[in-house]
Length: 198
Image (cartoon, rainbow, N blue to C red; front, side, top):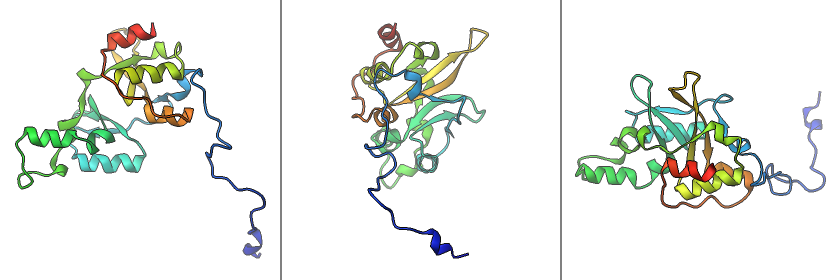
């Protein structure tokens, strides 16, 4: 069989996948659930708190994620970290707080635990509210709260405990809508976010 005979020259216009001409963007009025990463349908990206930020960033690049949940040595959820945290000012501010000089310590010596957002400081969205929201609503909440990511939580059947259910990403919303990324503003409390979506 002549395999070269299978090859042919493209006829007509050829476009890139996902180009504006053939990509169906979502609307801000579409249900928010269409923009949420649902962890029932896919894996959560996690990283140990003791991991160096250099290794954590490499892991994020390999997985194609910019957000990771941080776990302790018992695999208990303790916080979150983003590629923006790692590549931004947080490592430098941490080293300055430790009175580090370039001779004493380096960027790669900083661990995820040193710069993560602890669980106690999270602002979250309850999964039961997602059904009432549009993508535009979520983008507005994230913009008002000054957040690139918004964790979605769900109450367990016992009524006492919560679990992570999903994640909204400002960059993903931007991609889905074909618009600019939601702006960043001063962070509000979760109670304020709840009032906005009630």
